[in-house]
Each structure stands twice: as structure tokens, then as C-alpha cells.
Image (cartoon, rainbow, N blue to C red; front, side):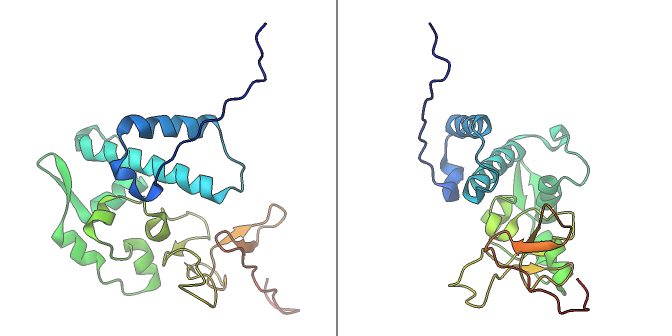
Length: 201
């Protein structure tokens, strides 16, 4: 008789900040394990790990595939971001000095959001995997200019992430399931101050 309710626990030790050194076979195994065993919806750490693994897989694919074979959708974040600062030469993506020069001098928060803050070439070529500073932009009113993770050591007075659209008190806010208005920072949990009576909400 087959016991169908048995469970197997798999432990994988991996350094998410150093995925470039993980063999492709291990990376693929980790990705399949993550997909087959989804974490709870509010598990931020698991979500960030899955995102970084996915970004590293895409980065490797981009680096080893001829541009004619990319077949990305229009406005794909990874392809568009890579083309902002790198060019495909001699079979690999390499930093383009002319493109990098244009990214180093944002003139406004909006321009900074569109171009990205200046990072070392190695992190630019990482193509979005550094979620603390170069996370793909959202398409709703939660667009943000990234300045790093929520950290009391870096910003004692609150979350350093700046929201471009709307007055969100310097936090990246999530929406309540019962309301269209932002409620709390998804990174540090800070609540948006209540609007005064009679004011805009």
C-alpha cells in the first residue's frame, strides 16, 4: 500500500548575494524546488530569494544567447535595462562608456527613477538582480526611486525608499485588500499617517 501523505524535507544552503558562482545545475534544481513548494504569500524573504534566482537565470541566458534569439516582449525590463548601459560585442554583453555616461547625471527624482542610480559595472551587468537598489519598477502608483532597503542603521527616521507618485511619506506602500489607498510600507511595515479631518485621503 502506498502512503500518499508522506513528506520529504529538502534543505539547500545557498548564498543569494553570490549566485554568479552557483553551478547552473544547482541553480536549476533550486528554481524547481522553489516553484514546487511555494512559500506563504507574506514571506518576503522567500519571495526575494525566488526573484534573485530567477534574475540570475535570465542574466545567464542573456549573456550566452545571440541578440537575434532573445525574442523578448517589447519593453521587457531585463532587455531594456541591459541596453541602457551595455552593448553586445564579440559574443558577450559589455559596459558601454557612452551609455553609462548618460546614466550618471539624473536631473530629477523622475529621471533618476527612469535611468537608475549609478552602480559598478558588475552590478549593472547583473541586470536587476540587486533588489536593494535596482529592483524592476512597478507599473502602478507605487513606482519608486530605490535608495536601499529599509534599515534603521541607514535611515534612523524611517524607510529610505522614496515614492514618486503620491504623498506616501517616503515609504513604498502596499494596498489593503479592502481599500484602494496605500496602507503600509511593504519593507519596514510603517503605516501611512492618517489625513486630517476634512483633508484629502
